[in-house]
Image 1 (cartoon, rainbow, N blue to C red):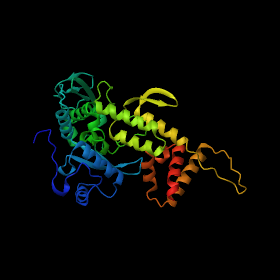
Image 2 (cartoon, one colour; image 1 turned 60 degrees about the horizontal axis):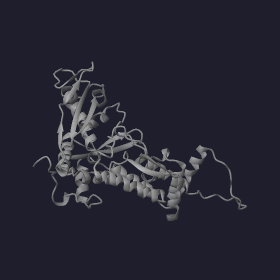
Image 3 (tube, helix red, strand yellow; image 1 turned 180 degrees about the horizontal axis):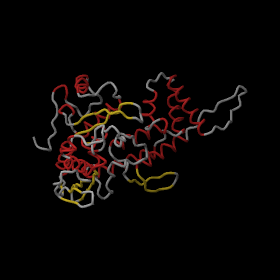
Image 4 (cartoon, one colour; image 1 turned 90 degrees about the horizontal axis):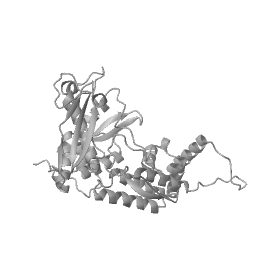
Length: 372
């Protein structure tokens, strides 16, 4: 099998392109790989979509869903990851399909004094590694710092692999960063095991587990190339999504468009939009967030009438207004008999409830109430 071939499991484990959920047979095998009952339906659905998009096969151990405790969410968060070979397989497949040129410059390692070398002979670990990927005449360079990626034990010492093969491990991290810059759409949403090793550190800062909020760029994701360098399908996709958002009248539609753009790696794409009657360029993710807030603020909150039929015009403080909005949302969810309040609202809002604007919370409440 060549590097452009993707091994697909046969029989009942084969993942179909039109599949919308895991089959019972597939779910049983996934549970044997370490995916337990802590996984959410959203994480499983996202993992299926990622497997379909990357064409990596979880049943051939080309891609994994790894659970790690997240102190911010107070639960185990499952993150897709693969090995550096999985990244290389995807890159070679894309190159075969697009008929672009592809290659690497020599890997470089840096010592603590800032001196770069094309071979690392020291017994101590390098301070950093640099990898440059060449795609269709464009250079995509990335530097990975050893201190940011090294996996340590409870005594804060490098694990055996990082102690014995530190130069090789940090070079893999740099290569993954460079490949993700060169192939942002194809590699979005999945990290390599070498990059994620530091997330298992006892004092890990959850660098890769942190949720990126709507409108906020991911500081560890590669930005979309300029329009003149971006593939036509990316430009067309960003334009279509921004056009649909301009025509939308429902905040729920904006949330769907945001999730679609995020899945396609288009949140950092620059588009020409109309917002507040003014035409200007901005990132698609920021525009979708602003458009969603604009529509949500246009949904009037239902006024409360007093016993005398007079509308209560009491002005609430921001804290009280937020608490009131959450209370109404919770009441509407309970009346509609909706389970998993925290998880469901985060998925519907596209962000944790604690970070959501009051306008978005009230808009969601208005959508739930008719079902109650």
